[in-house]
Length: 403
Image (cartoon, rainbow, N blue to C red; front, top):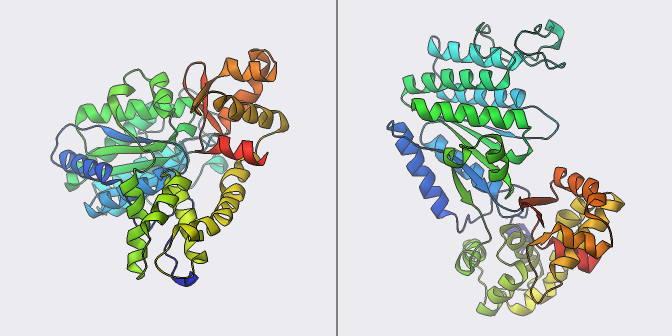
């Protein structure tokens, strides 16, 4: 098959040619946008799932839907080593520009954004403390002067409530809305999570047209709930999982049909068996099979020939890069998790931390540093007390086969 015409896209966050199996989330978000635009009460949205299930792709698709609806949008990716203030300032700055109100309310909103952005201090100065020196202030690229006394207290929760309130009011004046999209939301610091929940709560009570759309790993709801107990009612949660058989087939068949090719039924069966329905794996295998197949229709034999290439690509770019981030002690912990997960008749997703310790012949307390480091690196997560699981699908299989 002509590699230049290969339609599959196994890239991080790269939209596949066919966004299959996500119609429910897209339709639900259209309802949210329309309800908010009409002044109806609605919740912000949180997408959760393992890595490789297409959360970032779906987040971008939801943003595109907001843009088509005429909303102002901004997006940021949370990082554990960075506070929320600066990236959020850039995101909402873009949202205000997209709404485009010149002068008056628009300039006021930009002034509040500038005030919010420049209040961050390297030494953590807060309310009652000295403001950061001029040389320490970040320039967000906003020409209008900062609005003194709004979103500049230094307390992120107070400032974010004021910022969202002013932006929501400006958006209401334009008859549209603002949507802030946050990827890797579980990496926000505790203070930032608390501030985000508080501001979203305030906005929901006032009915202003501003929503937050977040995406993160499966334990994100627990992170939010630990910060504010009412977060369970504050967000509309949607678990993004692997595709069912029909959606997985569509992700392969429709792009191939656009290029005048097709898959034989046995090839689709083999592809689903190999990928487990995970969107990233579908794209990786699809690309490898297309390049290896001599012609159309693509057969199960073609899948068998191309599978080693796809597995090698995943071993290096998807699994291996994450495994390399772990220290020797952390790798030992990961291998033990993989072995414990398949100790029974069927492989399980989450394993007890006590079983991992017993497998290694160690006391659970002695393994806490390795476990905590893996949690911070995003290689494992804990959705329930005493249980841990990999954030990457099929990671246990990779560890057993390649390490």
